[in-house]
Length: 114
Image (cartoon, rainbow, N blue to C red; front, top):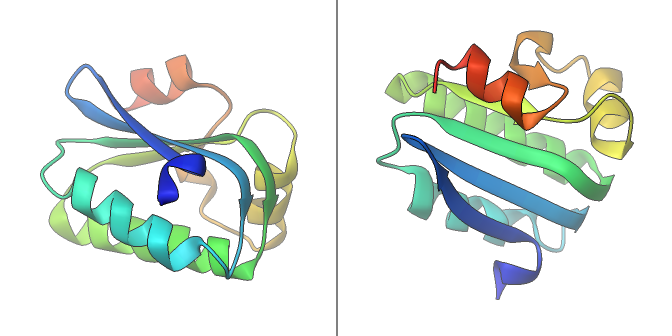
């Protein structure tokens, strides 16, 4: 049921997760479970948020938990947020880790050496 908000692909050795639309309390838990299912064995994870139109506190908590789990597993992660947009604005307002944010997919892949 989450395919309307999240899709998966491979980019080199990394798992590419693309989120679209509104990420909020209604769908964040399901999206989180789906990402964990797909990314648990990945060598690196790129989460593309450039098509997210709304990100509430549940979405921020989801990303924070995912980053924490991936960090603990030693899996590099980058969030692609564009130069502007709802996801970038929300994450910056929440003082999300700037070192995890990338403006585009190519830059994120380069920073992860994919």
